[in-house]
Image (cartoon, rainbow, N blue to C red; front, side):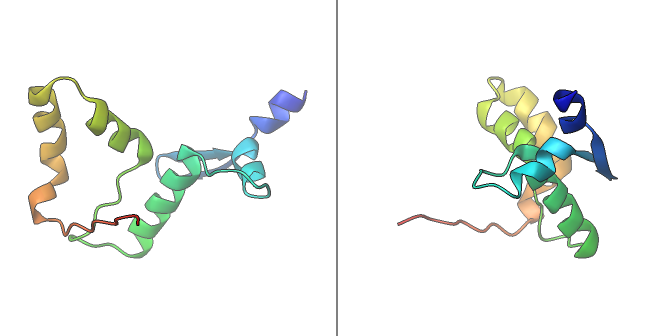
Length: 93
């Protein structure tokens, strides 16, 4: 029964579904999961639309990083219009 409660759908926003277990993470000392990050990116994109900024969900960023086929990657990222986006490089010291 606890698993069913953890999987309870709490919020659907654009293409993102947040479940009880996702919200429970926010009360913890836990890392954010991909769904929470994707929800926040989706929220920011709808509140502050911009042609310059593209917030890429973690699953897409991971796929781009790990894609073994360069031709598939090129076809995949082309609709993202990356050349016209501003890049922000955050470096860690």
